[in-house]
Image 1 (cartoon, rainbow, N blue to C red):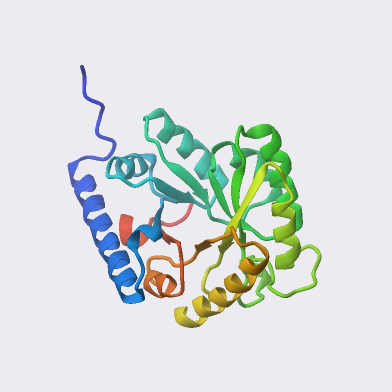
Image 2: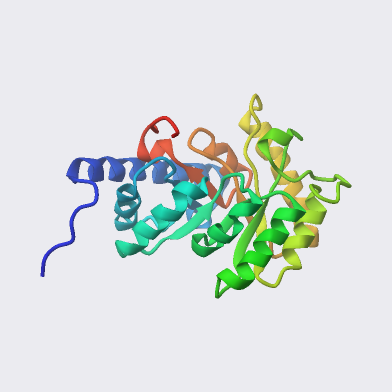
Length: 248
């Protein structure tokens, strides 16, 4: 039997393995400091701008969760990774336009960035016909109210962008599953301030949605602070895969 071709080469595989070991050690240390079990934190390898070969190699190293933020890159990459026989869960983590919903539901297992009622409805409609199982969704929370960065607004009466209405739209859709919240630390905020605020929002949110326990927060530069405030999923790119090329 002919061996499958190496998707990246020995040097790149070794670099990925070293990055993975370092990130896993950081997660373990952060969990120890917070008195948490590391098994309660899922690392999502953010493969945006990296080739599908890297994603396949990471899967071979035991990474099961991969993240992308642009459909035009993610859709063909997911197809290429699947063709290589790698079994992974795809997380869509970027801001999502409603007209991309039908494409995203075909490959994504989790969408982290739902921040409007209209987007929730578009995903629900697309998932009804484009999937054979419910799509897991998270509400992206705005911690500073900046509309340019996306996110639903906690405590707001806005019927389109308020956290309550967005959550209700997701929870009420048969083809969707509301699993929790996601946030990005705002520019200029210390991570501790951002994730402390997110923890407050999450605690209030779980009163109404006790099964929505996922908290997606923290990236390469601030994952320790996020874990300290309860993150269940951290999204790691450069610390794992190296510095990215310029976005195309």
